[in-house]
Image 1: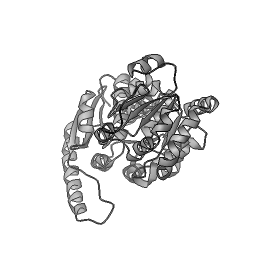
Image 2: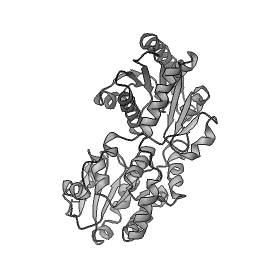
Image 3: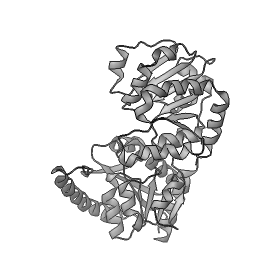
Image 4: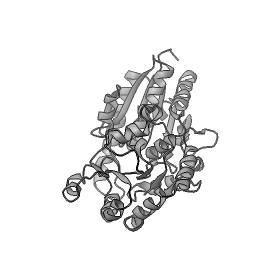
Length: 367
C-alpha cells in the first residue's frame, strides 16, 4: 500500500448512516492526512448535500431501494441497480481503492458488490442491534464488521465481528458549552428542569400528539420544554399553540448538541445515532421507537438499554396516553435521573470512529 491510501466510503439515505460515515472519514484523515477518500451514495438523498458540506467528494448513483411488496417498480429498481454497478466499476478502475467502507443502506450495495468481485477489503459498520439487509448480505465478504451492540454479534461471522460502537459527530465529543450557557441560548431559566422532545428533523406525529394532549399538565409542572416539532408539523402546531416562557417550539434545532446539554431528560425516537450521542453525553432518555422502520430495529435498539436500566421506553401505540405522564414522573425523581445517566454512559464508545479508522487503514496495509 502507498502512503496515500485510497478509500471509498459508501452508504447513506439518512443521517443515521451519513453522520457515522463522515466521522469515520474524519478519523481516517486524522490518522493519515494523506489518505484520499471518496464517497459513493444515492442520487437525491441526504448524503449528496451532507458529504460535500463536510469537505469530501461524493458520487451519486441512481440506485434505490426495493419495495417490500410485489411491484412492477421493483423491475426498474433492479435495472437501476445493474446500471449503478456498471458505473461503480468505472469508478473503481479510475480511483483504485485499497479498502471499501460500507455504512449501510441500499446505496452501499453497488460498491460493496464491486469490491467483493475484485477482492478489495470490505469493512462494514452496523449502527443497529438488528442489522440491515445490505450489511447482512455482504458480511460474508467482509474483512471486518464493526458493530455498535453486543446483540448484533449473532448475525455476523464469528472472528471477524468487532464491538466498536457507533461513530458520533465531532461536536458531541468536544462540547464547548456549559448547561447554563445552553439554557440561555434557548432563552430558558437555569432554575427549572428541562425536557427536550424531538422526533428528528422531519418530526414524529405521535410525539407531537402526545405533547398536544398534555399541554396543560406540562404547563402546571414547573418545568420548561424544548419541543422540536419537525418541519412537516411546525406550521400546524404553531397556529394553535403559542410559545411561552416555559415552552420553546422549533421546527428544527440547528445545534442539537446544545439542546441535549440543556436537557435534564430527552424524549426521542430510538435511532442508533441518537442513542450513541445521548450515551456519550450521559443523558437520561425515554425512547419511543418508530414503528415504521425495517425489522422494528428501533425497538431492539431501545431494549438493549432498557435491559441495563440505561433508558426508559414507551411503545408508539401507548405514547399519547403514557409518554408525558412518565416524563413528568421521571423528572421529579432525581435518583432515577442519576441512575439513567450513569447507566447510559456504559454504552458510550467515544473512540468508535478512530477504532474503525484503524481497522480500515490496517486493511489497506494488508491489501
